[in-house]
Length: 104
Image (cartoon, rainbow, N blue to C red; front, top):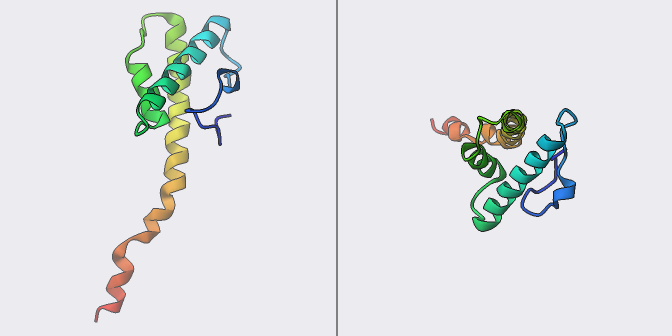
């Protein structure tokens, strides 16, 4: 999968391909991730999730193959968002509530 695979530096051949996509959809999948990679490399402040959301916004969803690939990318975005939230959850315990205990 995409775990530990930085979108901004991986090769097209390294993109994980969902097994449910057919040949035209695989070409679209790769092309869209290449567009996302180009966006990231053009704007280092852009994250992989934001880049792929931008690719989705600019895509023609009237095409059936595009719509299928878009749904797969939405699943990837959901996974990405959940993984990011889980990785950042340690910050929930860093609140300043503990400082109140010392005040008496």
